[in-house]
Amino acid sequence: MTTTIVSGGLVITAAEETHADVLIEDGKVAALAAPGSSCARGWSAEHTIDATGKYVLPGGVDAHTHFDFPFGGTSSSDTFATGTRAAAWGGTTTVVDFAVQRRGHSLREGLDAWHAKAEGQCAVDYAFHMILSDVNESSLKEMDLLVGEGVTSFKLFMAYPGVLYSDDGQILRAMQRAAGNGGLIMMHAENGIAIDVLVEQALAAGRTDPRYHGEVRKALLEAEATHRAVQLARVAGCPLYVVHVSAQEAVAELARARAMDLPVFGETCPQYLFLSTDNLAEPGFEGAKYVCSTPLRPREHQAALWRGLRTDDLQVVSTDHCPFCFSGQKELGRGDFSKIPNGLPGVENRMDLLHQAVVDGHISRRRWIEIACAAPARMFGLAPRKGTIAPGCDADIVIYDPHAEQTLSAATHHMNVDYSAYEGKRVTGQVETVLCRGETVLDRRRFTGRAGHGRYLPRSTCQYLA
Image (cartoon, rainbow, N blue to C red):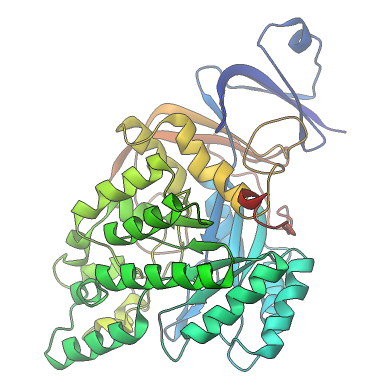
C-alpha cells in the first residue's frame, strides 16, 4: 500500500471549503483532518505534497470529448494518448468520450472500436457514451445491453442529415427505450433540416466565408430543436441532457422545462462563455479556427449562459473537445464554410478558464467545482468515486495555484493541434500538480504520467435522478 499526504492546502469541493490535510492510501482518499490536529499528526506517509497557499481540488471530469473522431472527411487531431495527456496538464482526471455507431452497423461494433482506440493509451481515467446514428429494432435492443455493462448514456443528433441525424420518430423510440432501461438521452439540438436549406441558400449567394457558418445555424433553430427535444422526452417519460447549449433562447427552453420539475439538464462549454461571432468573423480564413456546432453566438448570449450556470438551469461545463488542425484540416473548407470540420480544442483549458470566471465574479469557487467536477460525475454515474474529495473516493487530486498568471497559447499547450482557440488570453490560476488514483501524473508542471495508467470506468445510471 502506497501512502501520500497532501498538506496545508484549502480543500474545495462543491459542498464546502476547508483547510485540511488529505491522506491518500492505495489510490483512494483515506481521511481528511485539520492541519496540525492530533489526527493529522498521527499520519505517516511515503510521500508528502506541500499545498500551502494553494487550492486542493477534485480532478476535473470532462463529460464531452471526441478523441480520434471521424468527421467531415478527416479525424480529430487528438488521439486518446495525446488528448488524455493534455487533459492531465489541465487538471482533468476523467474524460467521457463518444463511441460512434456507424450507419448499417451495430452499437457493439462501434463500442468495440472505441475500446480498441483507447485501451492502453490513456493517461487518465475514461468512460464512453454511445452515439446512436442508426435507430432500429436491433440497436434499440442493444441499448439495454450497454446500460447493463456501464455505458448508460446515448447521444442523438437533430443535426447533420444523412450523417448522424435521427428524425423525431427515431428519437422518440430511443427515448422510450431509455425510459425503460434507465439510460440518459443526450441531444445535439439544432434543426438540421432547416439549417441545410439555409446553408444551400448562403452558398448559392456566394456567402462562403467562415462567419456564415454561425449565421446559418441560427439561435432560433437551436431553441426550436431544444423545445422539441423536451416535448419528445416528456412524451417518452425519459430524462434529457442537452449538449453544448450556446443560445440564450435555448437556455430559456431549459429553464422553462426545469420550472415544471422535468428531468431536463443542460451543458455549455467554455467557447460559448469566452468566444463569440467576433472570432468567426476574423479576417481572411482565420475564422475557420472557431467553427463548431452549435456555433459561437454574439456576445450578448453569454450573460444568459452565466446566469444559467448560477441558477442551475445549466448544470455542467464540458469542452466538446474536437480539435482539427488549421493547416490541412480546417483548410478543407476554403471557399465553402460547410466543408470546414466542426470542432475546437479545449480539454486542457477548461479548469483554468473556469477559474478565471471565479476571478471575474461570474461564479463562486464552489460552483466552479460543481460544474467542472461534481455535477458531471453525478450526471453520468461516476459519483461518489469521482468529482469530490472524501474518504473512499478515488484520489484524483489537483494542486492549484490561484495566483499564478499564464498566457494561453499554442506554443505552450499540449493538445495535438496547431492553434489555440484562446491564443494570447491572460488568465489567473494554473494547475501545478495532478494525481490520478493517487499516482502523480503532473508534478509541479512536469508530466510524469504514462499511457495506460488511465482505467476504463463502467458507469451507473444518472445519479441526478436517484
